[in-house]
Image (cartoon, rainbow, N blue to C red):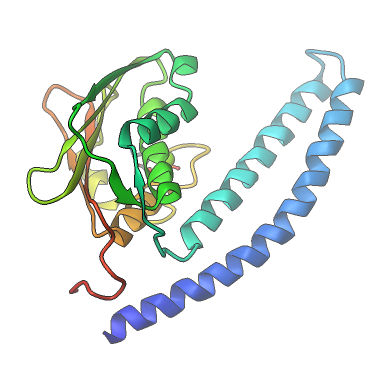
Length: 235
Ligand code: ADP
Ligand code: MG
């Protein structure tokens, strides 16, 4: 449709812009990181200089994350499906979110009969990682992240859930979660869930969220086994 065409052009333009921006920002950032490493050696621990170097470093890392997320967000969503063992991919992504460092216990509930799914490995790993990161970040005092995977009830594919024991999401924010750049975190980019949504869309998949009365949050992904051909979806 006309709307999809406009949307695709908009994303293509955003992709080009992001690539240029990424290049123009990454080079100076590299120089900043090098200079910071050198500067650190001249500062006494606990000196004002040391503290300031820390602040510059933190903000530089934030910029770096923003560039990474922006590139991921703007990258054209053309899945290259391969048969992927789901458990392995989930473990990789969850480990990358460093739950142990945040005193988050991971509880696995992987059904033994989940068949390998046909998905774009990179896009799915990124979706899983973003959800695991959000869960870990929602539990700064520690907690439990429960990861479950099972056969999808309707059709081929898998249902994957990430459940945390964090504070939950206030009702007035729920409608905005997937908006690009919407964040409640001091150092968030607000692109995590937008990327999850985009990567799931590209696979003809679906995301839903549960807000149990007992607290915490569940993000549920319905992942069909093979991506639908581009442009075949209604809407
Ligand atoms: P970011 O993590 O950079 O803030 P996201 O798009 O990943 O961006 O998430 C957007 C917002 O959604 C977060 O800032 C947070 O307010 C909320 N959110 C996402 N996941 C959770 C969760 N598991 N528990 C509580 N809030 C969450
Ligand atoms: Mg996030």
